[in-house]
Every structure is written in C-alpha cells, then in structure tokens.
Length: 183
Image 1 (cartoon, rainbow, N blue to C red):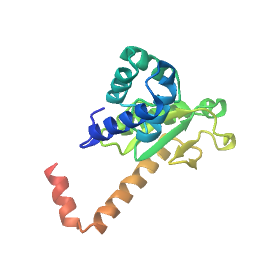
Image 2 (image 1 turned 90 degrees about the horizontal axis):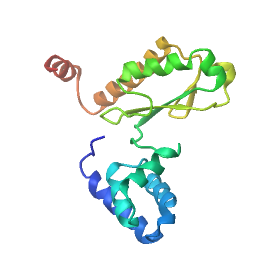
Image 3 (image 1 turned 45 degrees about the vertical axis):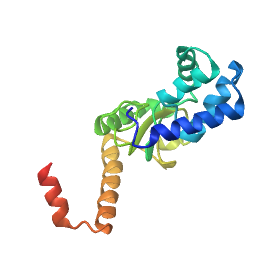
Image 4 (image 1 turned 90 degrees about the vertical axis):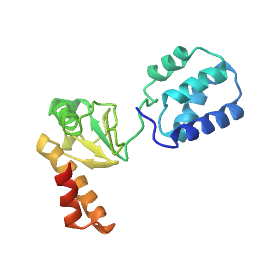
C-alpha cells in the first residue's frame, strides 16, 4: 500500500520512539510489533524494515512473525471497516457470499483496504449473533441477514452520507454534476 503524504515521517518517528523505549534486544520483537501496530493501526513495510534494522535481525524474520500471528495487520484499517462473520452459522447461510459481494463492490480482497483508505474488509470468527446470520459488523454495528442486495444498501448509505457531507461543505448540485461529467 502506498504511503500517504507525511506518513513516512510519522512511521519513522513512532518506530524510533518504541525502539528507544523497549531496547534493541531480539526478544522484544513481538512487543515492538504490537506497540507499532497500536500507534499506526497496522504494520507498514517501512516500519518492519526499521524494526529489523533496530533489533539487528533479518527483515524476513520480522515479516515471518508479523504474518504468522493473526493479530497483526499488513494493511491500514479503512475509515469504515466491514467485518464479515465466518462462524459456522454465518458461513452456512451465506457469509462467504456476503464477503464476495463486498469484494466485488469495493474492488478489494478480504484483508485489504481500498486505495483511498475509506473502507477495509476482513473476515472474523463468530460474533455471537447467530440468529441474525449472516452477520457483518459495520464500524462495530451489527448488520444481520446480509445478502448481496443488503451489501449494496450498506454501501449506498455511505455514498449518500458522503454526498450530504459534500453538500454541507458548500459544494452544490451543479458542482457535483460538473465533477461527474468530467470523470
């Protein structure tokens, strides 16, 4: 994933602070990774390279640990997160269809974030709402009985919200239409 403007400096600053605080002993690798992810929301490549250099271990070992444990994210979380339940009940009644619908509509795969970082998609274990299966957590709000049509409705609600916010920011209908016709 491409870093946003100013993100490189933030990553370097946080990694340095954490390494300075934790020390450069190899056994600090997992706690350092956890702290970096807590600060940044994920583990960017640059951070893992700097951690490897700071702990004097091969970068491949850092990647190996980070990809082995499910707690670590390799992609930044989106502003809005969709977590599709894949517990037994949800899977049996269409959880996989729901996740495929999000993948098609957002043009990302499970575990990824849209290039504009607006949305991220992940699969999660049982969320405990089996009677509403299949379930999707939308920014931690439970959405039940999610079908492909329901996925369209969820995403349409975000589009509508964005258009309302743009309207509040002084962009009128004419500007929106002009922008759309230019695209």
